[in-house]
Length: 218
Image (cartoon, rainbow, N blue to C red; front, side):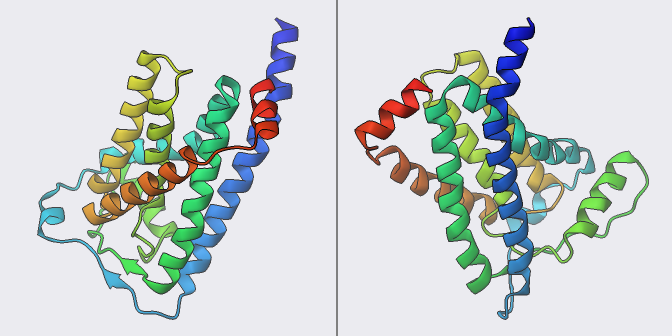
């Protein structure tokens, strides 16, 4: 038991450090891009207005944050190849998103929030930490979710039950961005397009034989 736990901890520090670096890079670029000199474009249409505002969905919205660390760690322990693809896909999209946020900033009008329970209290904290609601298109929340779903579904090392459960959790997180009024439908669609294009590039990239053997040995 102690040996297994020691091995688990020893292996876990690699994905932890990489995940933290990715998280810090994402957070810093997201807030830095808010200082773009260009005027933001308002997103959201008639269809978005028909989606009900439901603060209880903040539970799934917040769940995204711990999964930023948990998901890559589980992928690393299960299959290193899936882990590296997950990181590379997210990095490629992050670079693309920086240019989008700077040269085509967007903004989304959120509803007036009345804090009267636990869910609205949590949501109010999120609103205050991200005011105004700029850099909406594409949604980094959804990009991470779609990337995880793509990796999970494509993996031949993950069982069917885990694929269904993992994908369902991430789908609920994507839906939560609509119900808590953090994003519009077009933000989600643009996120999906970014993930598909980046995933096709990564999955069709042929690794050098030496590097491939090294990954398989790990």
